[in-house]
Length: 199
Image 1 (cartoon, rainbow, N blue to C red):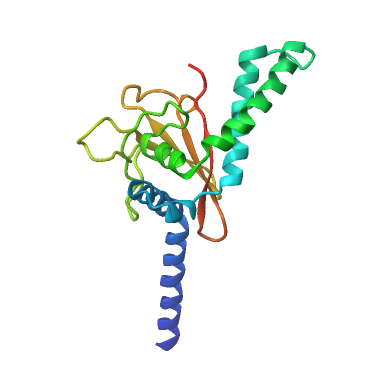
Image 2: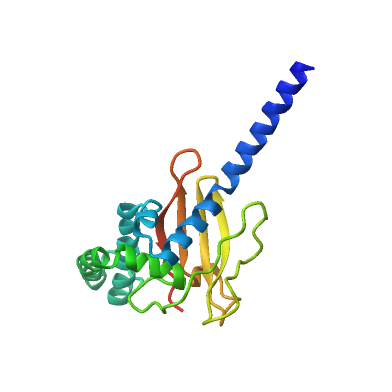
């Protein structure tokens, strides 16, 4: 009897640990959204890996500037080379200036990242214990808010894509993605944004 009790206790503990491990990224998203809404910089910053976030954006902004300057041409094209150099120079300082807690908080509320992100209030993350549907919505009142759809490329990464209410059928490549990566057993941090492709 004692042996069965111990076995049952171990199985319950293992199941609870596995459930927490699986739902931990969604709990992290909820916590960071609540911190953004409350403008709690300390709680918000604890969930953000700012160095990795900056590196991610520098690469993407540099590529966008280079594309505008030199098009999709090869490395032998002088204009493309100049575009790459200019992109790196311009975006480094721009990203350093943009990646501040208040700006990243606004991105979590609006579902956009950039100097022209529309001010909106935060959408809610999925409720722990319930499987996320194709999207999760915030409260129905007030200005239009982005819905969120979730993609889990692997066990150590989860991407939340902001679905614009006016274009719900757009592919993920045209949406802003918020990248969360595992840090430790069940700790997750915001480590990057995936900027939408040009439409």
